[in-house]
Length: 167
Image 1: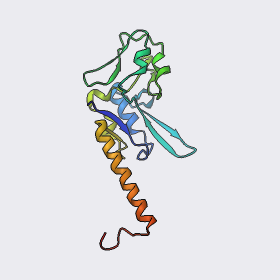
Image 2: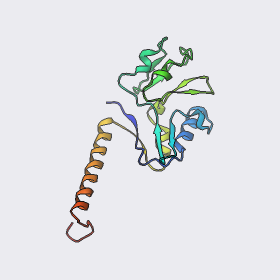
Image 3: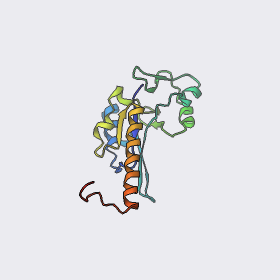
Image 4: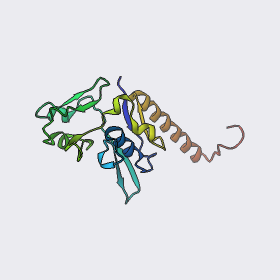
């Protein structure tokens, strides 16, 4: 099973270090506009959500590309073949998650390519909101987190203090 980039919005602080790490890894410049990961800020409700290519098994933008300019690399990451891309933007229009953006530097669409299996954004995320792992490992973490939440709710409903002796 190939690894994927996972984002936990509940841990994201909106610092945008991931965007800077990404832009530097790909272009040698610290410029969020050149990043392949985006932090979507919703200030009204105070939420910051990391957004990057989900590396779907069936890549709809690749299917819709009129010149077959999207492929997978040796790590299984969806990539855009710059030499084939005509810059029409069909991939941007057809990504259901809005994960493909336009790069002003290359004047073409870009998406997360997982940094050849070693994502720079994951290494620089100070809150560990980003991880790079097999989907089953990520699912197991989410299940444990959900079980812990249910356990805490039960203790609260029953009026049990975890700090009491014997627990």
